[in-house]
Amino acid sequence: MHISSNSNNKRMGKCGGFWLTKVIILLLAATTIVLASTTPPAKDDCGDDGSGGDCSNPDALRLITEEELSQYDGIAPKGTIWISVLGEVFDVTGGREYYGEGNSYHVFAGRDASPCFVTGDFTVEGGKKSLDELDVRKLKEIERWRDFYKTHEVYKPVGFLHGKYYDENGKPTYDLDLFNQRLATFRKKK
Image 1 (cartoon, one colour):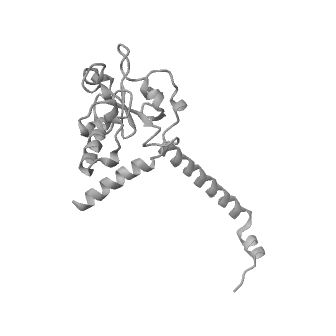
Image 2 (cartoon, helix red, strand yellow):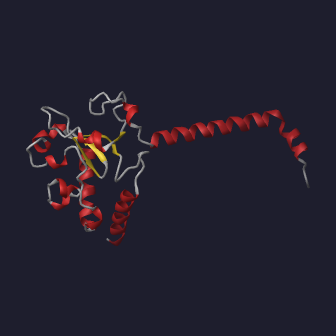
């Protein structure tokens, strides 16, 4: 049986179109909320008041530039100290005796020096080494260090470093995806 579109419209009436419009609007609103909650806020969303990322929403993480990260190297007396592991930035000011100027882990302060966690080369050059050159077991150790900072009682997450591991929208880059793929392959083999 063939029903013409005119008879279909008459059966549906004006109410059917009204409800369809409401459902579409609700779906669009839900999609917007989900997308907004999965993307880190841009730098300006937290306000750049120099407080070390302290926002009205303490759980909000933001996108951080390498230049901004470099300002939190702890060199100024009582200055804030940030480090980055795999592009995730953490405030480690509470560990000044480790990360402050002149201390053994100061190479991590104000930069992403992920390779240093496993190479033992605590120099600026050591922090620039490619993770591609490292054995996958060492990558697992870097991941372990990142998780250590994520769950530490004193060290707090600040945001995501725009650059090697996160793009300008706070999304993982090819380098971070490759890192995660290598780890996933390693875990499957075990």
